Length: 67
Image (cartoon, rainbow, N blue to C red; front, top):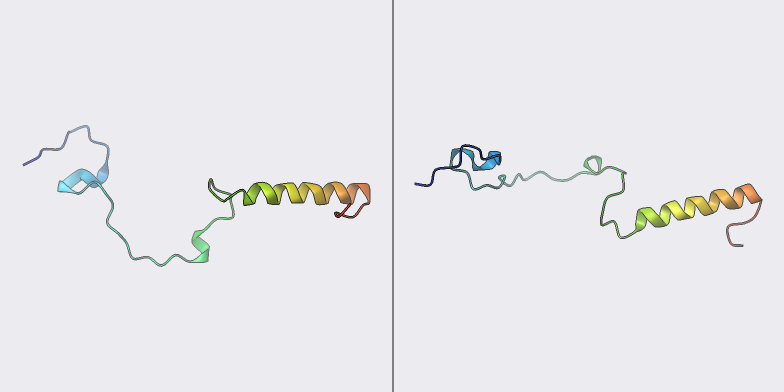
């Protein structure tokens, strides 16, 4: 029998666990996802921020965004 280290921090290894959380069959809904940009969004947050800055600058200068 394998004895866990008394200083083990992983709670999933307690009581002879596998070390991984059990899979929960929770259906993801739209409310679980935040609007905060995350790493790996493919640069979408950067492009959106650049577009907003360009729109603000065009509005300040009285020009169209196309110019």
